[in-house]
Length: 277
Image (cartoon, rainbow, N blue to C red; front, side, top):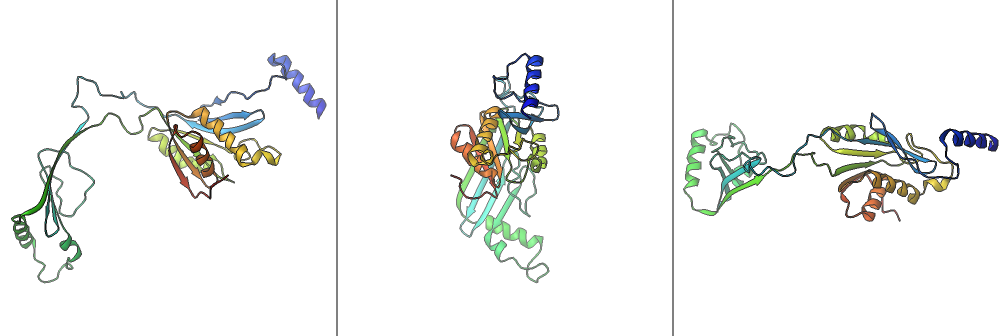
């Protein structure tokens, strides 16, 4: 075995023109399908999936000559009556909000939405005598409108949309699996977020998936694996990074968030255990 290694080293030295004394991690090579092998330490190689979507070149700020472009106008009047009735009126040609859904809304620019707690909690079943039809409901609504309101709030605002979802080039999503898994468990999530325009990174832990499997127990301690994740994070991290961990992978997410608080924007923990010392 020793003789075979010596012969191999000699051949590599002759072919590559490098001495075997120069030891260092190899640079990761990106493949066409997004998978690459990254040597975090000599002989310790991790498989990493790194996907960069094709983003259109959106400007971060709107051009000065078109200040109204991307402007959303919201104009409403909200009236609250003493009996609990809430009336929301869309004024002008403001954009209709999709947040409030009610059976009485028409969805038109000048529509009115009426909500009353007594109507929701004490509503009689359909077909019950005395419920009344549309005429009775319209008469009751007209009567309520004549009451003096308790409070009236008018909303008239404009918001400028300067970018599209997923178009920021400084956001990276890191997916870290747990014990017994691999980056393949994230396949659906990786494809989904890549299609939305996000850059995603998912490594195989040492001894998992297609990463190398050292034969010593010390290679699988928490800190040994955490240092691997540190190397992956430093290789692909950008200004804003989101960490998603499952099971044991949650511990590595919290480790990176503690080490790089200025770079970790959010942490998503799925079925994680207790803190790891």
